Every structure is written in C-alpha cells, then in structure tokens.
Image (tube, rainbow, N blue to C red):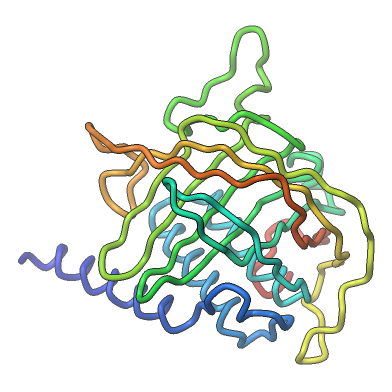
Length: 260
C-alpha cells in the first residue's frame, strides 16, 4: 500500500469511527443540542469530509445542520422506504437566508432535509437540498440551464445518500421528485442547553411538509462525484409527512457551524 492510499484509508477509518461514536439512533436525539453535543459534532465531521472532497454545497448543508441543532431544533421521526425496506429516520429541515449584502447573491430561502439512522455499525444519512417547495431531482453531473428556462438548474432539487461504517458508499440523486415546503408555525427557538445562542444567527422554529421519490446512483468512491460505469440504482421513497424545521437568518457572509 503506498503512502497516499494509506493516508486515505486511515482518514476514512477516523471519520467512520467518529461518526459511529457520535450519531444517535432514530428517536434517541430528542433534546436540543449543546455545542459539544455528539449529534451536532457528527454533522461537523460530515461537513469536513465533504469539504475535503471539494463539495462546498453539501459541506455547508451539514454545517448548517449542526448550527440548527445548536440553535435548538428537535428532530422528528419520519418513515422512509429505502430500496424496498421500510426504515425510520430522525430528521429535520433547516432553511437559511441572509440579512446582509450577500443575501442578494443567494437564493431567497434555501432549505435542506437532513435525515439519519444508525443500523448496527452503519450510519445512513439522507440529504435533500432545494430552493423551491417542490422540484425535480437533477443529476449534478449534468446540470446546465435549459434554453427555455435558464433557472432550471438552480430550481432543481439536489439529493445525496451516504452510508458510513466498515464500507463507505456515497450515492447521488439522479432523477425523481422532492417536496420540502414550509408549513409556517413560527415559534422562538428555545434557549440551548448551554444557555447561549450562536452569535450572528437569528433562529425561528417552524414546520415543513416533505415527500420524496428519488433515484440514487452510486459514485466510484465515497469522496467522488463521478458515478460508477455500471452503477446500481437505489430508490428512496417517503410519503407525505410533517417534519420539525428551523429558519436561520445569518447576519454574516460566511457562517460557521457554531455561528458567525
């Protein structure tokens, strides 16, 4: 084994061990997360993993998920059919916007569904990101504006599915449809366990209605965005249901998972 391969292997082992130790199984994470909460830390680990893979968008999604937990959101349990198998995940939606000059450069309300479960020593994570209430899932490897609708690539939903454990795999959403629509029930976020809120972030609890029918294709490696030549497909379905959510308004251009 050469040095580069050894370093990547050791890195993957460290990530897998951290995630396995951190993430609670569905319905175990009922309380808002403190800064040192293991669930928020798990999303920090995933954010770092995606950043190393040069996937800035998904890295931000996981960082914002950690921030939402630290701001006080409490996950909901949702039902998912994963390749024909019924599974129960913990989940919430975080929606983000900016009260700064960068707001004009970002979609008006990006929202992401984050769902996870632990089965034995395998962590499963589902991530759906979009800027509209409902949208087709677009393959990120072929995203390009349509002549008839130059905003189609922006308005499409982006999906990913991760399995982390003894064998790490990453799957990219290539077609299907997703709904992540706010059902406004505004409420002030509770005071986090540690008694302080993330700086530069305004937090408001709300609810979202979700519905999924997404086909995923496996990538060549866990940190790749290139699909396998003969990649199998995985179909993930979720019937219409309501999920806890949080709206985060940032007053800084580049928030971290702990605030501005």
